[in-house]
Length: 339
Image (cartoon, rainbow, N blue to C red; front, side, top):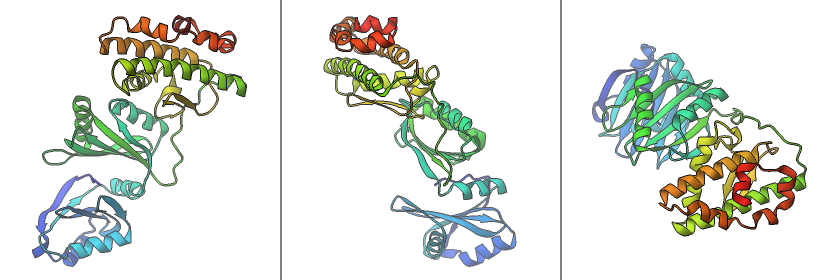
């Protein structure tokens, strides 16, 4: 886990020539607040200090994060071995307190990618939800790592490690966002243990009975799966889903229930899942998304006839789902495709 590095107190001390107990005693005497990093090839450990006292510890063991007293004892033991490195950094007390709160944070979102998720939009959502935790960011294919620490939703500290020295603060945040924009990246979001799940915007609900809800979802599953079969048949498996997800992200500002962070609406393997009451404008939203996706795929596949092919592919849908269309009236944009 990357920690911010406000000011270096001791840099690259060799464990072979450093009495670690004496170093900790000196830091305690000086009431140092910050962290002590102990590194070996394939190993990283850090002791978090507040006024000279060890208040938390974290180490990476076989790719797994270990925290708490056990980690502290192991780090101290490793620091007595030869040919390691010790570096001590000072940190602001409020940042140390924040790291203490979130070091054992639970995952909220995993494996988000810039192909479907805007990092800036993600940060904006976490700010709106008022969450305390952090965002792990992997830039490109091993081109850097960053962590954005959040307090009540606000990014209060950030660290980025690329090919050069680690940078912190606003410069690090700007570098992460720009790097992800340029070369892509992936994100994991963690919130402090015991925090409630991210609050999703509640969609306006329509008074749909259970039977009609099932019929409406079945209708849209039929429409989307037929279009998916056509698009993937002209290209490769997954082509439709990638384009459709990109459109969902772009339309989420207008239709919040499509927001991938809210996780209300999901489409996969020809099936739709929707958490909570169906919004009144679900069909309008999916009609817009279908139009956008068809236009996107027509351009990507260089098929000027793709739209007409979709209409032929959807022939018969209106008859098969006549009760849904008669009751709801999905709208002119949907009627265009299923008429």
